[in-house]
Length: 425
Image (cartoon, rainbow, N blue to C red; front, side, top):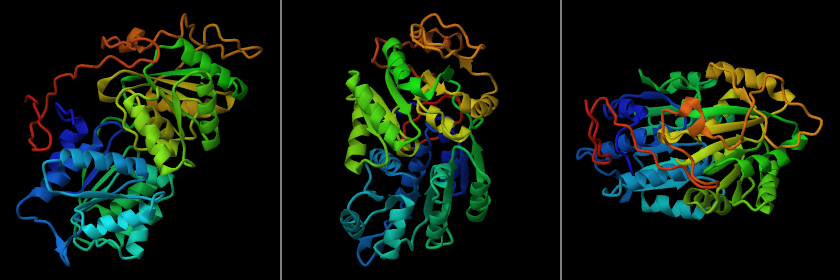
């Protein structure tokens, strides 16, 4: 898995989970939350006195992970299978958009861990194709996203079908009142682990590019042509806009793929895999479709459209600046976006730099007067004084970041047969 040392959320959450306590974990996207619950699940299911649960000679699930999107379900399942490669523990995913027949067969064959989206899981519960009577571990991941997608009522329905006595691990990047109410109902004297302020990572620099809606398409091609980047994620507000923007960038000669909810599961997975493996340099995505994407070498996030909420801004920006890499967040903003910009700035604790694209024809439009003069667009984060702590720079245009050396990790020691830790006390 490439782990050399635990991330802060892993260091603090894994001992709590291994002790059998309920957990409320609050951490940003990209902090290593998956391993923070996957490792304890594998450890506990591998204990000699737990044994594999059988009913009518078939395995029945002992751990359930509820997630908002199929992409996140697949990502977690891949992590579980990689971490548990030397065990006999089985895991399966349940989500919509694909044939239910294969899932029925997988459940009939037996599994130990189920990673599921709420809607499809309720289908299996209603049709009695899944037995959750011996469940001992429940994980609810990205609860804030499930709230945004309207899944909390479904989650409560699922909870009514689960055993009363179980251990629950609950993770979110942000916590709204409705989510706090849910945690009060389902967590028993939980340990609360919060990693930093719920805000974008410090390894990300932020820039605003004042514009108009009509200029955005010309501006994005100019920006990409004059900026040294690695892998880039561009966010749009609608599925239609993501589709057409990807087509425009492809005509411009860029290696790009769209990712939006109207695509079939196979096409979505192909886009994600192609982006992860370097077939595509750019992924144009909507917020919901992008949940669960874990690509550590994304160098830039570009908000083609300003998101609707501060939380969504945090989620988007969390796609870059991972694993102590530097990242940049560019946001195209119109006059209508200023109110949200101010709220984002309050979370960041600083004003975001307004920039002008050198050599770009703004026509009659005049960017705001308090913009910062920019000599060259291609001056990237390695030349930014805020990021000079690291010597990592960009290579050529459309290339990837140079790989970072991990800093030595100092903190508490814990051991796991699924993650070799070399930390020093």
